[in-house]
Image (cartoon, rainbow, N blue to C red; front, side, top):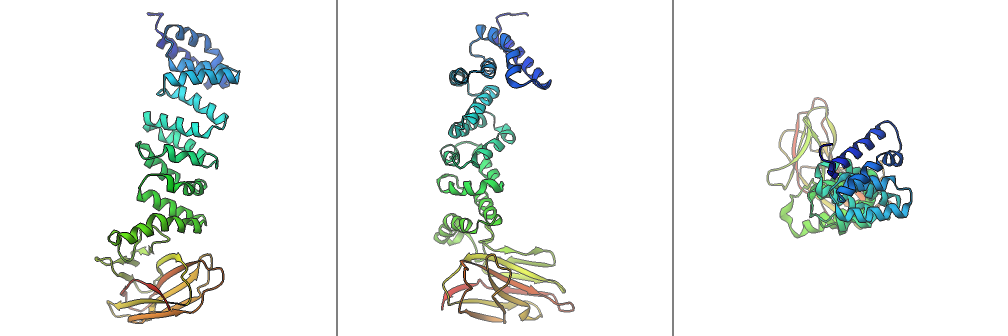
Amino acid sequence: MLFPLNGIAKEQLAFRQFRTKLSDGVAIPDAAQDALAIARNGLSSDPLAPKSHALLAMAESDPDKRRAILAAAKTLNRRDLALQGVVLEQHLENEQFAQVVETLDQMLRVHPDRSETFFPLLIAALKVDEAAPQFPRIVNGDAAWHVDFVREAARDDEALVNLASIRAEIPIDDRPFDSLLITGLARIGEMETALSLYQERVELPRSRDARETGEWPSDYPPFDWALAEQSDFRAQTTRDGENLELYSRSGQGGVMARRVIQSPKAPFVANSSLTMRATGRSEAVRFNLRCVGAQDRFFDEAYEEGDNQWRIEKLPDDCSQLVLEVTARTLRGDPTLRAEVSPIELNPS
């Protein structure tokens, strides 16, 4: 009213009217049509007003004209959420997944605080097989939101397989991301994919730099060791990282350490030593083997104090991956078990 040529003011008025209609349950095209006259009037004074362009596009029923409006408008402004939201909707409608990812990237670069709003849309696009290959080009680590996004995507079970398929092309080196992805794949039963990713991202680089981990690595379960963590039944590495300390109070028992590996060729031998740090039964500590997916152990032997060597002559059929377990059981009335176990080495027989 004070300045009739203020196109931005008219833009705000038109958009407020549009949102009011939406809150009353009016459909988006009809709500935009209701505010169209004010938006056009505002554009006559300020042709760069982004929300006015968004309203023009939402009110346009002709798909070709709507695309033309958006194509022109998005070159003028890539910061306005309302306009970019209409652009995004257009890309989704046309199943233009590369443009969906690119538009969301532009929105998140300008509005990183909106990740809770936009990440679900990106993850939904990632789940589409045709869209997944578009992500490495955008999610390349040069924006602050990229690492947060891949970590969030790795927490979504339905996105894990597609995310794993493009992991090699994503130039982001982030341990929590890889840990979430590998653990998630194993959790949903994609063991072959998980193991392949572990070998590529962790095992091979780790073998070139042994200083990165001790002899009982536990960063990437289940292919690293998963260790018991209860107050009265636990396993933890020694300070030098070479051995595993076992602690079990009277009446406790279960799996102290568990790991999945690619099955070696049989026959092979397993070597490990046991050092008792308190009075107790050495046979309370056992070494077990079973195949991934099987409940029953096909190998179960007690430790003896000192060096131990076990020979495994044959693996069950269809046993491409092995579960290695160190278990312990302290009977009621037994003293607290305190012991150390050396790394388990598997060697050809």
